[in-house]
Each structure stands twice: as C-alpha cells, then as structure tokens.
Length: 129
Image 1 (spheres, rainbow, N blue to C red):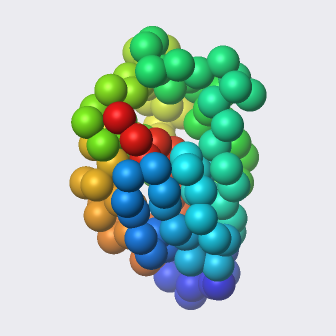
Image 2 (image 1 turned 180 degrees about the vertical axis):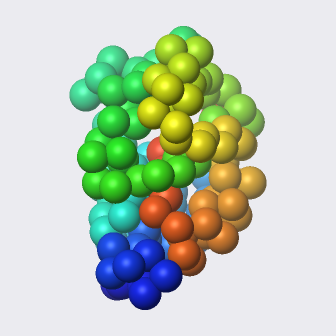
Image 3 (image 1 turned 90 degrees about the vertical axis):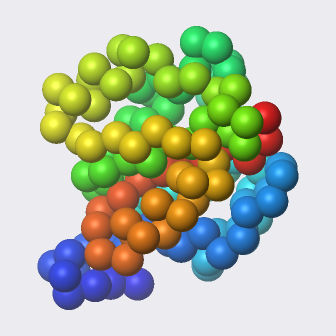
C-alpha cells in the first residue's frame, strides 16, 4: 500500500475491528495488543520491554514505530484507561518532535484510522482494561 501524498512511503494499516481483547488489522490479522506502523503491524508483547499498566508505556515500546517511519504516534490507554504513559516517554517524543495522541482505545482507534489515510502514523493498542 502506497500513497502519493506520502511520496511513495508505505501507509500504516487500517484497524478494521476492535472489541474487548481483540483488534483486527487490515492485511495483518487479529491481535490482543498490537504495534502499528507505516507498512506493518505485529503483536505488542509487553514482556519484551517489561511494560506494566503502571508506570506504563516506555519509550522502548514506541521506538520501533519510529524506526519504521512513524512521524505521529497514537498511544491507547486501554478500554478503561488503566494503561499509563511514562513522562520520560512523552519527553523523548517531544524532543524528537513527534506528535503523540494519548486516548482510551476506542477513541484512539478512530483517530488512528483518520490519520493513517495520509500520514506516517504509528500506534500502540491495548485492547483490555
């Protein structure tokens, strides 16, 4: 998938469906938690970086999205907002001039799908609590 608006950069995959504990990504299948980025998607396994609900999303969780060309990130907090985002993560994104949107998962999905039409967006999606 390519888009002339993004000068032949790959588009970020669209989220087709979101329910408690499951997210379906166009062209990539179903996941519990997922990392989305221009040209791809993969399961977001929190144990890779030791992420927990509190203190929350670490910069290490986001780094892969940027490596794949994301210039904007959407970080979901879970359906009820239990997942936090560390201040150090936000500071690092600000230093790199990366816009971060932090929302509960359903609102994050809606914004992400709007952005992925014509922008290099990455996302971390947590589908429970």
